[in-house]
Image (cartoon, rainbow, N blue to C red):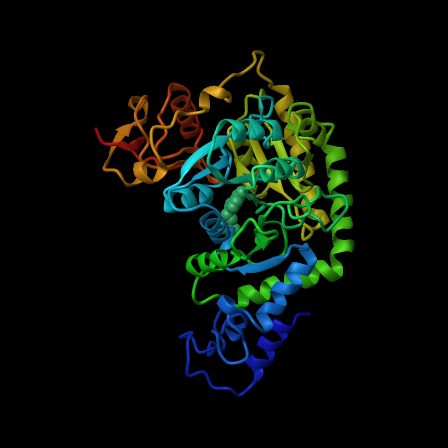
Amino acid sequence: MGKLYEKLTEYEKSDYYPYHMPGHKRNMEGRPFQEFYGIDITEIDGFDNLHQAEEVLLEVEKRANQMYRAEETFLLVNGSTCGILSAISAAVEMGGKILIARNCHRSVYHGAYIRNLEVQYVYPEVSEQFGIALGIHPKCLEEKLKEEKGIAAVVITSPTYEGVVSDVEEIAKIVHSYHIPLIVDEAHGAHLGFSENFPKNAIAAGADIVIHSLHKTLPSPTQTALLHVTGDLIDREKLKRYLSIYQSSSPSYPLMAGMELCLDMVEKEGAALFSNMLINWEKMLAELATCKALKILKKEDVLQAGMKDFDVGKLVISTADTGWSGQQLHQVLLEKYHLQMEMAADTFVLAMFTIMDKEEGYKRLTDALLELDAEIEKNLPKEKLDEYVIDKKLRLKTNCKITKAWNEPKEWVNLRKCEGRTAAGFINLYPPGIPVVVPGEIYNKEIIFNIENWHRKKLSVQGMNKRIEVPVIAE
Ligand SMILES: Cc1ncc(COP(=O)(O)O)c(C=O)c1O
């Protein structure tokens, strides 16, 4: 199984008495979560220390490292979030300049906030048809690097939340020609590289730092993640320093053992599990191809838009032009069929599949979608609906750095009245938490229209208060 897990369970059975933390003292017999508490220890003798791993935890890191083939790998117990913060802090000096994809997760923006960075953006391609952001085109990134001097690092997200994979290999070549590091937030791609049917992972594609949320697409507990580093563009000592700052000083042993068990399972049973997943996945896609009203995002759609690849396991179900919003479909799937989706957006719903899904999971969603599709098709609206804006007008102008804007005195102004005002807080559509408005950006008509529209459709818009006011820099 795994040495850490075995050591922990042996220790649980031993007669060592704990005169140490945690306060539950592993004395939770007959109470809920008993098994969890039994192996929940702190850095006692023989159990190593994550912040200076030399023994059993170093072995887990080495195992992960061998499986992912990076030069060095670190276990993360505070999610990809702490890996992203550490990577940015190690790669860019305080007050420096960073180039990020505009569809990055909010943790990337938080890194820029903490380090007072000047942020430049490269914008993802968008699919008008599906109403989603795709990945980053290498040419756009190259143009931006040519145009903007003094960039110290580049951050992109690949695969995206919806599974779109950018050409990381080409992007890495371009970024390296400027002698700066490429950080890839591969939070949604911890499974990449374990089956030849999956896209290549960003480590193999040449990125300097790659961050994986093990918990997102592999059987590992929530909050567990990995950070991989390769090459000499990143100062490893600095990276370790920031990991020790952003990670808890009391890393959870059940979480670390959970990562070890996950790696063990992928290593020993992965081939069979991934191939089984693929069979179920392909079967579901073939059945859903008969849908007449709902549209399923396909690999061809992504390739046609100039993207490198499309991941397996992300089912994007578009409701565009059906008269239904993504949120409506989400609610019906939840209430009528008891199927909980990963996310509902304005024009689509996202379901995700991993090696742990049962055949039943594929079948229940397929049957429900086919039934709903027939129902929706009967009532398709006669005219084309055009309720959302997804174009260059959503590229907001920036007035000042995130750090300044978020720290400035702010006032709350009704959303409808904030055109031309500078944001003093994030507006996020959650999940996945990609900022729609970033502190320092100036509100324009189109973004106000979209936010109002999402709010009306009951999507989860974060950062606005109940009176539909948003924070802007006080005048
Ligand atoms: C693209 C992306 N990066 C990073 C994160 C943060 O990951 P974690 O929840 O593991 O901290 C998320 C979370 O949803 C994400 O979607």
